[in-house]
Image (tube, rainbow, N blue to C red; front, side):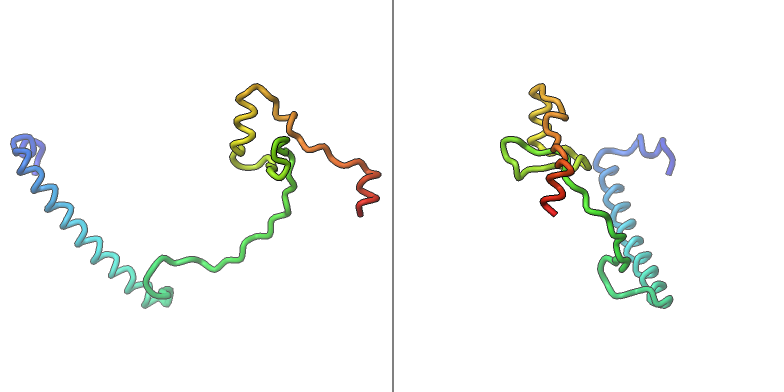
Length: 115
């Protein structure tokens, strides 16, 4: 079917063509998926229906300590990774600086007595 044929069709005819195309594609996708699943089964890679997850152990990541603390809610902290928390973004919009929220490292003497 060329472009001129489509331009000469009414909206109803185009809609019918669209519905037939979608139905035909859905049928072909189902058949292709079944064929691929059968092939996986033959290769011994199929664990059954549903989404597959590879069973890889995650790489161990070191603990990341928080660098910033909310002065209004000291339990709310942020390590400086990922998206900024809402409390910090609001404070930065109000004109404060990021360093205003930085957690000060403990002195060497305090660390020795704590440990």
